[in-house]
Length: 207
Length: 306
Image (cartoon, rainbow over the protein chains, first blue to last red):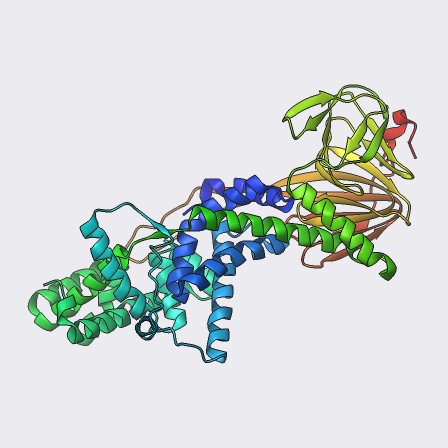
């Protein structure tokens, strides 16, 4: 995970430079965590345009709250906590405003489901691999949205952000055992949801 | 193990979170139970789909937009700190002026006019020309502009003046002039003198220290270690490399007047004459009686001793 271990001292120095408004330091900070961060936000909120906004807002919030960073925590954990809180706020606001539920299938019917690869770079893969990944992504995105936010968050932090259980526990402010349970339950629930989808759409089954 | 027990453990098994013994029990059950095996396969497929779903990365444009937004936020923060507690009548003018200066600083441009003039110098010092990326020697009477970094070499002390405001830099000290009345101490030690009517801001990290009086600033660094073990079910405990954390503090020794430290979390600290204020990165500000009665005497050779 970037920003941990040997990078810890550098993290503090990096933030020190950030506090002075050093553009190069900002760019380095973004580059250190951008990939796991954008994957986390994207899978957590499930909407590209929102994920992009929250990605940017996360870094703005980092600048505004530099003084609240505790060197005892890793830089990445702190940034993910900010991103998580912003994402949760957005999800809560969305529920309050009774907008389209976090269900990619229903959004797809309105023709506005985006799977992010059109504007976000992905690793270069063979066409068949990309097609398979695209199908996986469609099903994963649709079904992740059906999980409870707390389980989805834990699973996404583990799988897409690559965080350790201890880091997720810090972000969710919960014991490590609880985090493990949430992730195991999330995977089980997701498996059932995806299995139900396959039952309804046998063509989607690979064999 | 019953089917119910096994199905509860399948996710943990797939993620590698089970200890060796329960994992073996689950595997043994799966060999003889078709239904549990099917569920295990489904979880495996789900995990595979999760991991195959293409990882994404932000576009170059998105990254640049984030950096631009951070610079803008920094400018907003700096403006907020500088305009805080000013008399109401000054707020619109000060905000507009500071905004322009902050934008210039964010763009790494040198300001137009001189912020300070070198009134005295006792040795070698250099100034960084950010536009050209080269260092120039400092001479008496030189103008120090917004955006400049000034570094004193061993044996050199410098007195900078701007009206009634003075900055006395000790040997091996580095400062950045980030605005006409805003200076960042990067290394070393300095004395800032400012009248109550023209408060000077000295910064370190995200903290702004407002000076109205005569205050000696220095940086203090202490080391702390973070250790421990990370234990995960089914795996040997991992002993990560001990992390050494360097904590840096800005120490303000007040000889006359007062300082007020403003952090971005609105942490407040006021220290008056005879007190010492300390702000530690990531910590809480503290005040204590001034222990060293000889504070600032190093500046006497500049004719500015106490």
